[in-house]
Image (cartoon, rainbow over all chains, first blue to last red; front, side, top):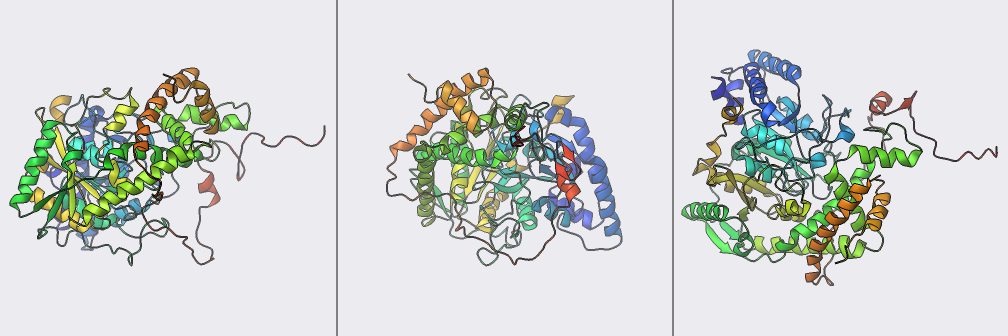
Length: 495
Length: 102
């Protein structure tokens, strides 16, 4: 019974709860039991809000019994990546520098989830300050991939993806600066959507690369991603880069989800995709065959500047990070060193003690790229290349509705395999970075398994503010396949 | 081959970034950051003389609101994470030199 409950999608569960067929309290109890059973091994959560979750669920059950109309996520347990502020518990960013930080307010997206009557189960693990591709850079704990305990869940939203895959919540929020929603979703066999930059308010999201960061959902299927977008998308005056209704209206992403996109044209940059492992290229080819059978036309394109995305990204993102993370100075909040000799040491020792290796490395790289004498050669050059990358997208979107490519060049790699070589780790982001540099939406959906039964992600990218169509395109594939219904069996490994 | 970022440069950047690095970190970062900077050199394969830099994908402009008082954090909320405080202030080590002439 509990297992059957945990396998439901958000939408199915919400409908059952709203109809009174299932109690939210029973669902929350089942989720908390699942966490108690397997999260010692998986390590998806940094903190859980057991008491709060049960109380919220009871309140939802009471309202439903009283016949009140309920929100779109009524009684559904969801998780939040621990770089989004909650006035409940700590908001750590998986960093020692914020280990005990208690946010005085909720992020906009958290307010939206609560307003939709969702039950917030807890905060999930990440690479410290969302900097990483494996969640191994967490300063607080280790998360493993529910499909294979010796492998990484991906990152930086590795805790969110692992929690959704391992049935420790029904959906989660992640943040994506260079692939941090899509890559872990791909590695864990779930759906991850990075919305267009500006579609979702970043108010209360701890900043990493402010021109790149975007919040989005991690879910078990495309319909749930649409449902989550219905809850979180839209203008918020506290984030000036969240766009207005006049510029790009929010729509009901579920309304036409099951309508196929007629005359669909899919762009493929075969040259760029050639760097992916063979089993990933094969899965991509099979996916394109499915679309062809649905009447889609495949357009071969060249995107010559995508090969430069890694170099441009790691200069721009680290430059922005070095500026954003200057605020952790031990003065107003966060860790302060024990006995500083002077005020300079309050900064330099607090930061040295509080930040982990990858965060320091990125601050150093970004500071260097912005420093006198190097600004033009590195930062400015990267911004120019960013423009060329965006133009590649503009050109392709004149000829096609979307671009399809792998989410990652490999399936989930082994824990420890790349952590000592930062450049090798950065190179794994080859397929996800460009969407952030160009500001366009992109989704990863399950599209197969490799010889080791590890999930493969298919990435679909579309023009800015076309999430409605993007989700429909993703749904077309999902409705013809059952990869998204496979689930890992972590319990067998933990016994 | 000379490193792109030798240890003295690493120390200089660390000072700019207010990071008190250990000798071991300085040595490690010199190697790792040099490798990364070597990789990003590939940007120079592209002629960008006539390309505008793109710092932001949206048309960004200043956003104003009416100059009216709105709700903000109360003092206790703002201070609740303070590493050290005195009354309603954040406490920090002395920053200005004593200029009393004594």
